[in-house]
Each structure stands twice: as structure tokens, then as C-alpha cells.
Length: 106
Image 1: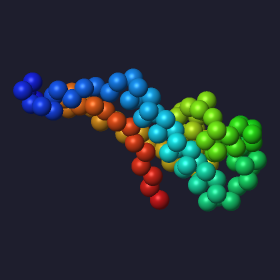
Image 2: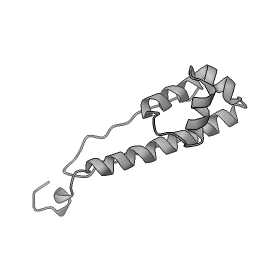
Image 3: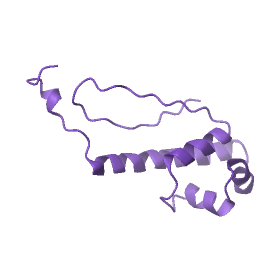
Image 4: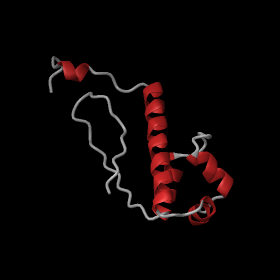
């Protein structure tokens, strides 16, 4: 790709953009966590035991009342509940802005 190509001029994501993307990603994972717990008919207490956390923490996370949980923690909890998690990274093909998304397959 040449530097004359307008796509090469797209900026890299700012730290603010990446923080917002991370927030959206965490929110989506929280929704998947809540749906997985509901689909398995687990109580929050049962799910917390499986996830090796306490019920009040899990409740706050599911209610979107805390930002302290990490993407890593959410994915570990989802895996503990039986979800298969795959991470796909695409190498940059130019100076394009990266993005983060969650795709859920049934």
C-alpha cells in the first residue's frame, strides 16, 4: 500500500478509543456471562462457586455495577462455565485503526 493511498492515513486508535472499545467488549462479555448462567439454570451462588469467586462480586459484574473485572477474568469465568473461547488476531495490512469485537456462536 502506498502512502498516497488514503487508507494509509487512517490514524491508529487513540488510548481513549481503545479504552472505550475495552468497555464495550467487557459489557458484551458480561451479557454473555449472564446469558450462559441463565441458560445453564445456575443460581448466582452456584455460578460463583464454579467461577471461583463470591456471589456478591458475580452479582455486581452481571448487573454492570463494577468496572473492576478484567476481560481476562470474564473469559476465565466463561470458560469455567463451559464456553469455548477463541481469540483471533489479524495482523495489520496497513495503517488501519484496529478494533475489538465479540462474536458469539451457538
